[in-house]
Length: 302
Image 1: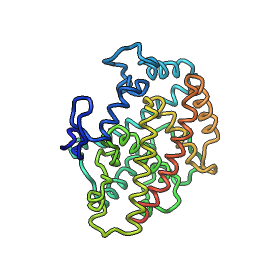
Image 2: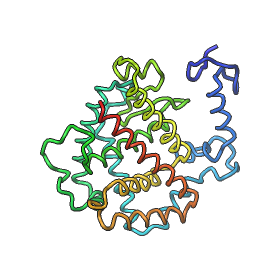
Image 3: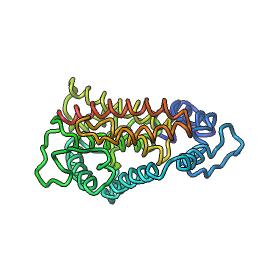
Image 4: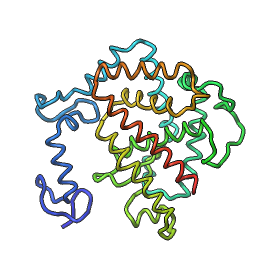
């Protein structure tokens, strides 16, 4: 028998459908853990008993309360972060139709193109003026950028954090039922199954470097993206999370003197609304920083 959801080998019927053990477990969690699955896409449009444990509109209420407890400058900052993420996404039109597996060469082409897009958007984004100062290389510079990803470059490091952050967000929602693929910001993906991963590496024979690449991508999928999936943050909470990792990424010599003040103010407001987000933020930021480092090591070797 074949699983009707993911096409793996099925083990029997789960909730009236032929499915494998992993898909059956997913369905069981979705039924029992209503605090995670009660509020689909943060719209609070639900199809089950609204009296279920932990209010179905919990995240919607938290988001609303977050804005109510913030001062105007913090609200403006969150809106700028949300606008920055949306502007980057708007620079990638038509990728939904292209969605499919990507190989190593195309990944590098996309990285360089996306880096230029982020630099151009950041040049006119007030958000970055509140994060970085004393930067000798302006965002709008037309000077040809180095193609070597291992070079120390604050702008490139910021881009990689944004890239990994968006990849983890998308992977958490589009990485498959069993979360076994890394979904990139252009909606193309790297499948972590053995045969598909060899194709991503363009049929290179298995080697120590290939295992390192697979381990790095597996970390992004199984730990970083899964932590996003468990937290299930809405757009405003994700904005605070992105601002946190960005300000922590910029070296002290380049960091704006108000960046840490703004970050601590945002985190304090967040903790006031939902104290449980503190430990979650600490875990996810650690995953993003480590994931960015291993991803940088991988692409530096391509």
